[in-house]
Length: 336
Ligand code: ASP
Image (cartoon, rainbow, N blue to C red; front, side, top):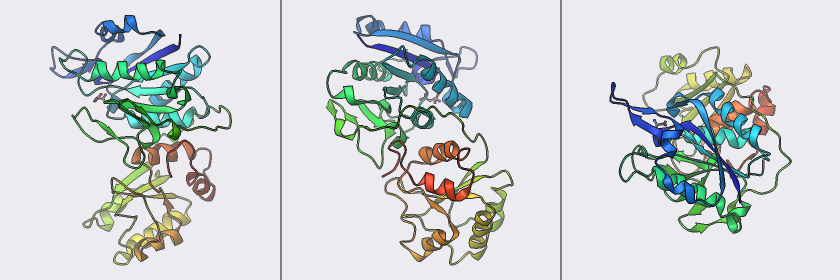
């Protein structure tokens, strides 16, 4: 029988209404598990690890990602697979961070959670939890080849580095805009699973501050743009239009500012605002200049992957040219 570790970090799945405030608050793992009697019949050896203080994932930080990574690291010899119970709001960030931190682990890690607390009638909590568990138990079939980090939600398994939260309340909470589903209901697309690795190499050093994300829009002015940057900004991610365009012909101050940041060794990354598709820097005159300035294309990555990858690479490659080369490499299926 498989040995599976359930790591409980918090999130709506285990929340209950606080009598005083009336707001949903993370509760204990014991309380959560007591509502899933089906666990007794699951054909696996299940152990649990609860974070001391389960959180609403809005409170997550790089240190929180590292804590999840460490639980997996410290237990990797004793377990065949891991389930991380996590809030949906920042699940894609934490799962992506685990993908980068734990490359080459060669064991499945599935993040899941729910839109409604487990105690709510007809909640998605039990279905998501037991569905994720079932995928991990079914290791004789195609799922035996799944050895990466995924997000399981509403009967779908997404690659962590490709997933993003797409709905505030629907059970269809996640999407994978630029990448096919790894599992869709009963259908396991094992030909898409990541394979090939260069050995396990745990690296949990992240840039913990200094990443700015600015969404460009037609009414943004020089003063607002500058106010969003400061001397601590090490990585600037600009959410551009379409295939990666910015109004460089009509705002010379923007060209000059980006040139200055780049000359001073700052990293600038171009991320499209579009939900689907990727950046094609140079397709238009209004994006070709970005190549000359040294702006890095994030291709078709999710915003979560762009932020986490930049935070993970920066301490390893503080030199902008080395960073650029590394950023354009695919590490864990995050880009095409
Ligand atoms: N605010 C919650 C969280 O991310 C939402 C959820 O779990 O669905 O922790």
